Image (cartoon, rainbow, N blue to C red; front, side, top):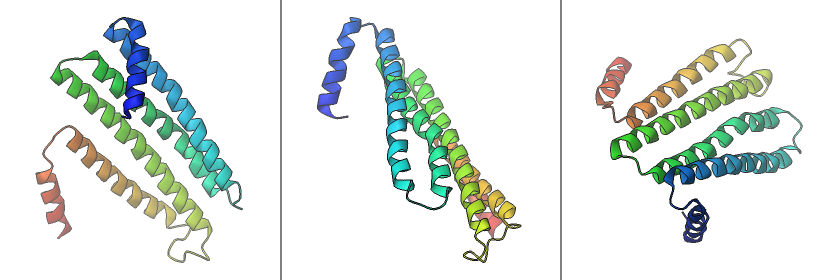
Length: 176
């Protein structure tokens, strides 16, 4: 974190006279506001850039980004709030892992919806994409969801420090 930002944050938190719980609550509330501001700023900039296009693909993609951007910034704030609480190592690690898992699930949902949107648009442009037809969109969508889901499950397992060596080995053997 930028040193001046850290100093400003520390000065603002002195208003709570060392009460860690109030400080954590203030950080969480501040990041909800920062998340909304980031969401509005990013979407406004992207909407200006996409206004020039003739199709609605980019507008729909920007609309999909609202929720993951907002929630991701919020989760970062919650992580900072948790660090302010000075919980025991195991409790703090557990909460961080929960936050990471939630973030993975949020972006899993976004990627699945974005893949579906891309495939729908490509399917509607059969003249430009000969390998994607309206009837193959469902097949490709299911394939994309399996790939995205597998990657997300892998990320969740790594987040929770679960050994995935056997999983990767069995996937490799099945691939043969």
